[in-house]
Length: 106
Image (cartoon, rainbow, N blue to C red; front, side, top):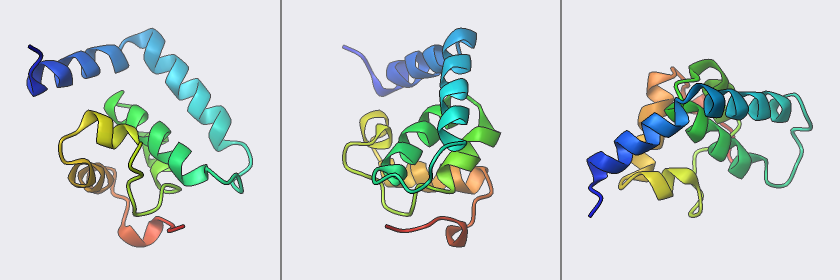
């Protein structure tokens, strides 16, 4: 049986692998330089933001999460990776010093 601690350790180990981390950062940078009017912008911002946050790419995570809005989508990585997804999202934004007013709502 895999415990929450085991999962968190595996997630951290995988996402901080230099190759994986680089691919996520490159893809996020490309996405962030693109069109901000895409219909799934906030959902995608959550996906990149969470992956970047857990990969310890704080600057890119902050850029993505500023576009994420205040509602955690039901299918986001926050929900899949955390027992308390809303708490972890708010905690990440606090650690990245993103005030609530800096995030946009759908």
